[in-house]
Length: 124
Image 1 (cartoon, one colour):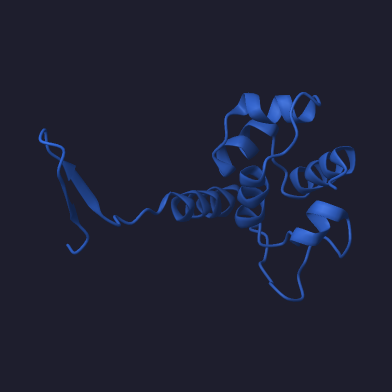
Image 2 (cartoon, rainbow, N blue to C red):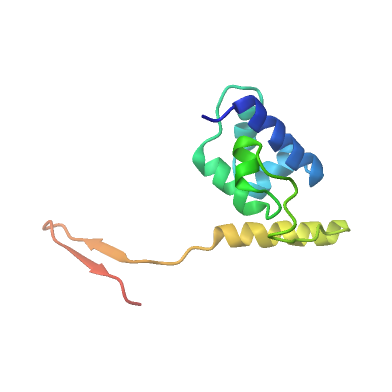
């Protein structure tokens, strides 16, 4: 079972390591700022979707460390990612992460007709 207090402590470690405010963090992982506030104030517990977004946004975060505190942070040996030194590089890296998270591919189109039938298009 996830110890929420310890999880939040590790989350704050990630924010401090990346020099992010709560608002910038929320924007980076594409969650509402109020969600971060509710989480940090103990109103809500982290959802699986939230945990996955954190894991995907930060290559230096080991999922086992984030969830249970086992392992190391920052994880550099198996997945080296140098931290950008200046603000421009940091912003570009954040935009790249955001763009990667926004990638969507069209899988299929389904058209429903008034007579109750439908047609599926899956090849474009």
